[in-house]
Image (cartoon, rainbow, N blue to C red; front, top):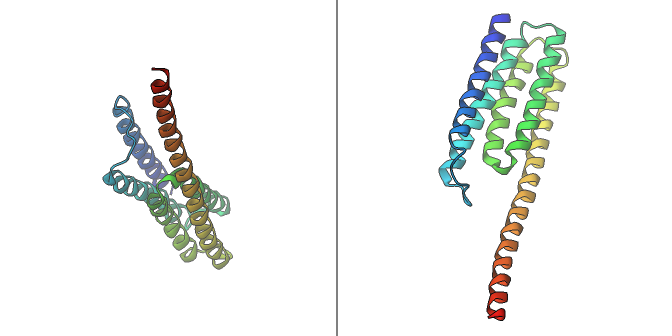
Amino acid sequence: TYWLVVLWSASIFGLCGFTLLKVLGKSGEPARTRAPARATVRATRHAAVLGGAWGILPFVVLPSGGVAEQVLATNLIAGMAAGGAFVLAVVPVAACAYLAAILIPALLAIYLGDIPASGSLVGFGIVFFMTLCVIMAARHRDFAVKVRGRFEIEKQSQTISLLLKDFEA
C-alpha cells in the first residue's frame, strides 16, 4: 500500500500543479464581472475530478491499513469534504459534484471494508453530506446577496456622482 499512497499523492500534486499553472497563466487578464456558462461547467468538471482523486484514498488505505491509517484517512476525507464545500460554495453545482465525488467512494469503501461500526459511520457520512449541502446553499445565498448589494451600491454611487456633476455645472 505504500507505493499506492505514493502514486496517489503524486497524482494529487500533479492535479494541483496543473491547476496552479493554468491560474498563473491567466493572471494578467482583466477581471470579468460575469462568468460565462462554460466556466460553471468547467468548475464543476474540475471539482468532480479533484473530488474523485481524493475519493480514491479510502479504497487505497481502508482495506489494508491499520486502525491509525483508517482513522487518519476518514478524518482527512471529512476535512477535505468540508473545506471543499466551503471554498466551492459560490458555485453550488461544483460543490455538489465535489462532495459527491469525494464522499460516495469514501462511504462505499467504509461500508465494504472491514471497519468496526461501519454502518454507523456510513449513516454519519450521509448526515454529514446533507449538512454540508445545506450549509453550502446558505453560504451561496449570502454570497449572492452581498455581490448584488455591492453592484447596487456601485450603481447608486455612479448615479449620485453624475447628479453632483450636473448640480455643480
